[in-house]
Image 1 (tube, helix red, strand yellow):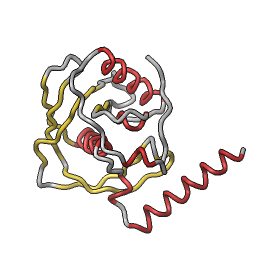
Image 2: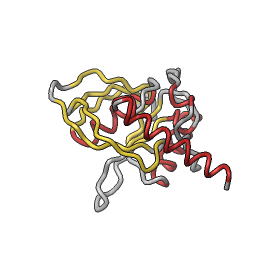
Image 3: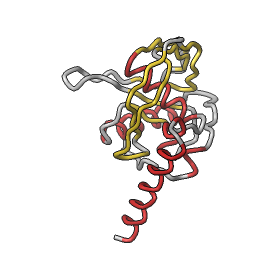
Image 4: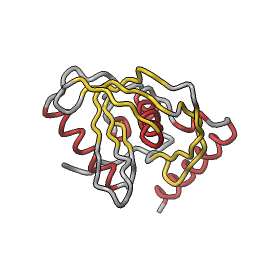
Length: 172
């Protein structure tokens, strides 16, 4: 397992649509393991493969509380097959948008169909933080970022700050 660099915005790769995985093989399993290690190292709760530069439809998530054991999920070709009518607004952040957070409204619960790391078809119904996390990461696979749910003004402010920080880091 290895920690991979996380792509940060603004980067056009984050807007790319990820490709389906044909079969869950050792390469995909290694990617999922690396993604989990990368997510944990960055203190995140979810990560999409595109965030580490791999345009494949893979995500990982773990929303366990600090006093609980890890509960990692590895999802290949995840697809939301049901959304609740009830919506909730929660503060979201993203490892590709370090130190930036915003309220985003999403369905309160979802059911996601996916393949696990053995290639077996699975489904998970999620509520609360896990539901938000899965929706956020599946959005990444479509090239949709959490800032895309914000007003143009808020989105522009965040992207300008990230561009300025990138320039400052490059000049240092």
